[in-house]
Image (spheres, rainbow, N blue to C red):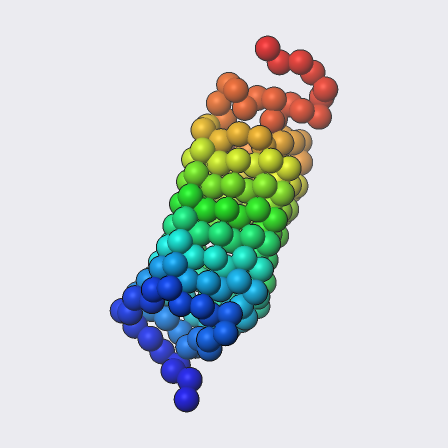
Length: 189
């Protein structure tokens, strides 16, 4: 019989591509676990940590992530907008999030540190007050995105059009100006 609730447990070196998951995890840590293409639909993760895990292409329909930390994880192609958005909150440290989508998600004050965010979709997302520390935004898409008070000062490769995104009081470095003015086809030296 499948367990419904697991609390305060550490899971190491597990392969969840073949193993059934419980319905809810609270205060749990997953280390070196594989969730590639796993179905995480409707599973709740509350105050959990994923470390050195691969969740690439996992199905997230109505999954719950509340106060979840991802550290050194591979999260390729995840469609976070399919998660349950009620009280959604997570942080990412040294993660690969290439091709992920945060379409229309309200994830204010989210922390992204040392992450690869290549071709990530942030269209119509609310990232107010978020921290992007040393992140690579190569070909990431920002359109009608709320970036007010967000910090991009140490990040690079972004292309953000100030005319179609809300960037009031957002922080950028001098070296990042080209990412804000790219559409004007000007030369910045």
